[in-house]
Structures are given as structure tokens and as C-alpha cells.
Image 1 (cartoon, rainbow, N blue to C red):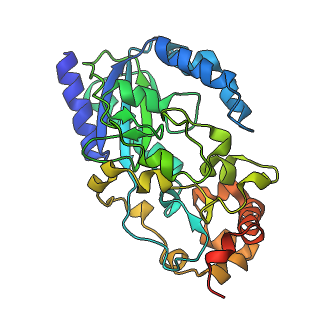
Image 2 (cartoon, rainbow, N blue to C red; image 1 turned 60 degrees about the horizontal axis):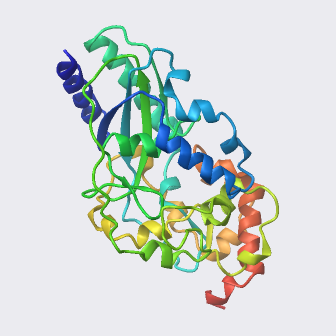
Length: 316
């Protein structure tokens, strides 16, 4: 029965467009809990105080879903080979080129659970996509979707790292997958390429309060002066450690219409970004995760670039 149910679930994942699926046993995460505690003790999470909350929920899925037996880990590709046209324009990460992934994937997860119930029977479970104290990457590692790279992102040996992670925690007993080997080897391209030195010299450890993604999204107060001229023109998110990762040579463009980049956004030049009004912001990023930063946050980031030396590479 377990193998039959597992086959059904993996087929549903494929039909819904998920690029990878893996399943692990719902249990207390002993090793991961120790690592999380050590990371929290380093106090490198900046203004993300929520990371220090709900430790028990993060490390024990049965507290989120009583009676949980399985974690269904899913990956959804968002890679695109399209780029912003103006090389001097302030940059945003590829993952926000299209519509807000939270809404797109959440809808797919709800359809997923409905299909499970139609094909298998009544199942109690909850779905998550970057929306609760769930250690998504760690469950994905346990489920064999990839290994945690030196840049602390999940890397798949045949698909790279440009994908969103999501989970369904349910009370269905299934066949479990297993972790795969770490293939980072002696490579340290991500470590050397990070302009803010957000990784430890050995890798596998992120100083989140130095990460450009954190600084441009989660950090709400004034940006620290120590990062002047080091933001690599990013104003929302950052792709540098993925761009230099050799495993991303295997990335292929997604087929999700909702993630298709807006042509008018790709065409915006540096001047248009700098002079962007709130009305343009609201129109340009309607339904986008960029709205998380709000107009004021994005303007703060753009101003920081202009005031601290990043404009030196731009045309006069």
C-alpha cells in the first residue's frame, strides 16, 4: 500500500509541474536542531527576530501537524535565461521576475492535497511554501532533492538551484527517500564571489545579516555604511552565488506562465528605475513578491546604490 500511495503522489507532483519530489519521515530533527541552535547563538540573523521564535515547531513537524508521518518535499523551477536589458540598471533577483511564488505554488499545493484525497482517500495534512516555521531546505535534503551547498542553498546535481521549495506534511505513511551526496568538493566560487562576505571561509554557514538578499528585503532600517559600493547593483534579492555555481549550467528555463517576466520591467533603464514613482511601482509589481519591500524600501535601496559608489560603473 505504501508503495502504491507513493507512486500516486509522485505522479501528481509531475502532473502539477513540480520539478522534483522527495519524501522523508516526519520526526524530530535532532542534528538539524543542533545546527540551528548554534547558528542562532552566533546572532547573525539581523532583524529577522522570527528566526529565533518557534524553535520547537521548526524542528518537530508533528507539532505543526499532529499525527504527521510523512514530509512531502517539492521543488518548483523558476529559472529563466531572460535578463534585464540595461546592464547599468538596478537589479532584482530572477525569482521575482514574475508573479508572487507564494500564491502560485500555494494554489498548486491545495490542488495537490485535493488530488491525494480523490485518489487515495481522506488524508490530514497542511501545505507550506515559505510561510511557516518549517525548515524547508533541511527537509528537502533529507528527502534527496539535493544537498546543501557551500552557499547554503539546495543544489540538485542535474537541475541546479533555481527553484522554490514547498512541503506537504501529512498523516499518510509513505516510502521514504534518502539524502544524496554533497558534490561541492573543493569549489569555493560562491564564497569568493560574494561581495559582502556573507559566507564563512569554509562555506555551509551564512552570515545572514551580511547577505544582499537580507539587506534589500528583510532589513528595515537604514542600510549599514559598511556595505557601500558592495551591493553589486541589487535592490531586491541577489543571484550572485547562483550565477557562479557550476551546477547551474544544468538549469533549464521554467514553463510556468505565472513566472514569465514582464517585458516592460526587463526594458526599464537605470534612469527609469531611479525616477520610478509609487504609481509606477504599484503598476509594475502588481501581484509580485517585490511588494514585500514596499515602495519606500525599494527607493531606499536604489538611493543607497546611488549615494555609495555603485553609480561609478554607470554611463554618464
